[in-house]
Amino acid sequence: MNINYTSLLLKGIIPFNDKVNIYAPTIDEIVTMGETELSLYIKPFSITIRELYSGMAEIVDQMEEAFPTLWDMSFDKEGNKEIGNMISQSDSTLHQLFAKGFAYWTKLNEDDFQFLSNKKAICKKLNWVIDKQEFLDFSECVKAITMAKPNEDLIAPKNMSKAQLRIWKNVYKGRVRKLSKEQKVELGDKILILQGSSTSYISFKEIGEMNYYQFNNLIKLYMEKEYYEQNLQIYTAYKFDTSDMELKNWREKISLQKNI
Image: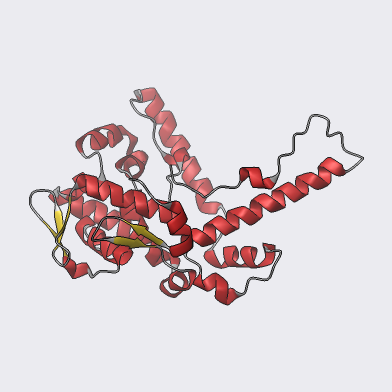
């Protein structure tokens, strides 16, 4: 899927095909709906089977082989219900989550989408047929907008022996426990960071009007600049030996974030 990241940055839109555009939400829209609701529109397009079953490592290889993607899983009667419940923490099926997600990102209606027995879905309003590859391409766009990536520390290795399985289960539990104790950076925290880090005044109104991809790129930009300025102070301080220190200008490290 060839994504125009510059268009996404400036316009908040990814032209998906000749019928469909995918829209990045603004910060105001996310604040209004809440980050929890937004996550329900992201997870169905970003979570993998391996990620879901890594806590059950004795069956993760088997599940991934049987259902390589969530799209495959959604056409299994039990999987459609079980995984939908797991992701949503409610009685939603995967098909319902997909329909809500497709509708949200395209500004269409949930009722426009119907899932067929041939492992495809259709949006009747646009005569848009969605197969597995179309779903995977759509998922890449959602991940590009949100920069959603799996936590590699929580992904089970493949083809583990029984001894390795025992070790992994303990490691996995420890990592999950540690993650649950870590302080999470909320959207409001990021808004304050961006507002406070800018060398020129950015109003909260302007931040609210930014699209999500634009906002996250600006956060990264200011963090890189701050990191450079801190290192520059060290580099130019007489009391530090910087003979082995290489200092690159922050501009050399800045590029649009791409979920590749």
